[in-house]
Image (cartoon, rainbow, N blue to C red; front, top):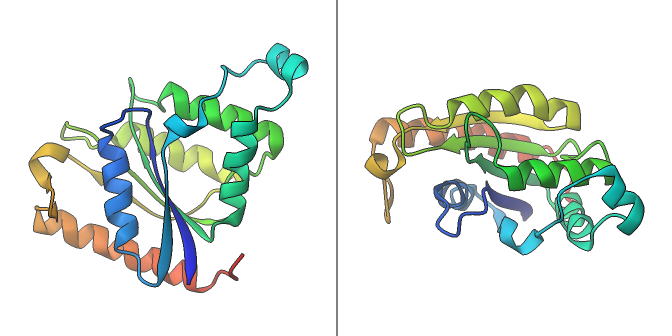
Length: 182
């Protein structure tokens, strides 16, 4: 059984991106899912001075170990003013101090959602160009618009969007099947 991480790249306790990541990851066949909450990895703001004085925070090392132990990643990005949330960018900054290959070549299903009709498209585009520099093996991406209109406790209510996500999940499953279990 493959191990995957479900991550909503937000510190919101009611993160719609975390909800989407969990929903998508739960649909991936033959996997064990670990849900990551960024609130469990509070880190000081990255600076060279902080790193020199205090070293790499334990939370960053723990997060790095979790990525290392996974076979694949399901990440849904929250969008703040067209880019990553501050908490997620800060995490990446710390992780690059451990290993520039943050995503370690693991298959990634990369998503974004928002309450609006663009579905986090701007941050998704930024991540699609940025993640490969950190060994992000993006297998598929998915922008989910108008979260509150298209999602309920039962999952995705818009059949066209549900079908598109299912297609992306199949691609992700195929990539996971080729990964040697960690």
